[in-house]
Length: 619
Image (cartoon, rainbow, N blue to C red):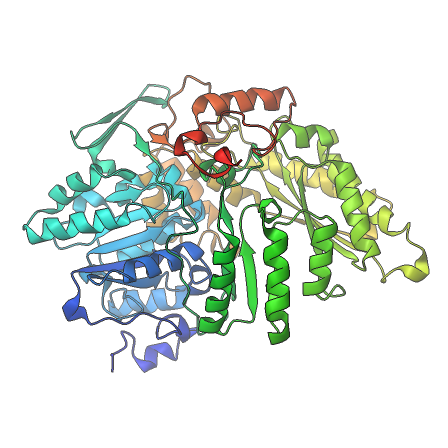
């Protein structure tokens, strides 16, 4: 019988104690006397969000297949438990064994979004691991980061011993073998970091030095250790049909954000939207074999008892065997009451047919992501979606019984003008007008259009990585202008307008393209009480403003500044396959309002061909 790290008394005083006790369905248990490596996998947000993350489930399964390794998990304690742990000096613990994380060999932290950076420090602090790499000794775990934000790790580089750049299936075994060998030989922490630096895809920040010009741009980025290469190439798993995938995924005790079986049908995206980082860093598209996916579906539904299965990819409609897979899932599992969820679909006859089979049309809404309100701006961002296609898709849906539509747009896109912003209101109204062309007796009640705007944040490794981002004041002005235009529309009563917070977006923009100077800002913000920044009720904007001022750093330097092509960018040492030359060509095409065909229409030599597989070699 394992002993829980928290007493019953504490568990009864916190919200959702099930977040901390473990013992979920399919949790891995191992005999610690047979283990050489203890690895704790962390998602620096609350349990319900972390448990919904497929990447951690894949790595958890992969590591635990090794007989010499035990992979456990930890999530950010919610604010109530955080307070108790500090007061009672309880070290943060892993869910499986309930042992303190400071006793592990590795702490691996998933970097899913920029606004979790202060939570990383919370996890380190509560674990009683020194926050800065330079302060750690032989007795502390190796702290490793991976995930989307590791494609610009510089703002948090001082807190990590190493970063794994790319997909985890390829080099983690080599890294763990190196650790085991170093441990057996009585090697030191620094000797292991040198071994790690020689492994492809591994970045050890302490082995590099950054110098700055007087204008605060980067003068040079140099390696100061002979084991550390000047360029680090992302790791990519080319054979996605024959690699690790959790067929007995963990099932949480409490409702998670994504409480369902997740089938990852492909990686990458053929579309090439110029604002989308994922579409660039996960190139080329690699599809999973449909027969393999059918087998996964059977096994995962059986091992979890879940009643919903979701197809995961950046653009599901582009998966070549989508029809075969979807109709198989419907025929095979609908009799068992299993729901099928199909996010990121283009609205066409096939999609509507499938959705009418798997959803209650009266309850569900259809989702379109035009991203921009005018065709001109959709061409700028290379969103291959015409107004005609949107209106036709909506009309087909209305004729099939739907009467609720969700629309997603961005404000602050490069070259945007007032006409583009007004276009969001006009397009929302045009969709409502389409509905009312249906004879009254054939309509399914009133139409409901929900239009949401988020703010555009330029991201590394996109054609827009050089552009100026709008300030929070400019964002709010755009929002007010659009809100006014929404009220002018004929069908304004049928249109609901939602928007995001501008100040939070501004901070995300700072970290997205930030450099090493920001680590002190993040550290000071954390010490001033900033934590769970992505949660609006916990976001302390004034604290952030003060720490930027105290550190003499102007956030607008990172956001509201156009970069030229010659400037050294903080992430330039990373090679994601997509070349800088391609990104610059795409930026110029954006300014010229030219559309670039998708990968299946024509190869535009983005650089991803070097990986020798996927969509680049189809046919």
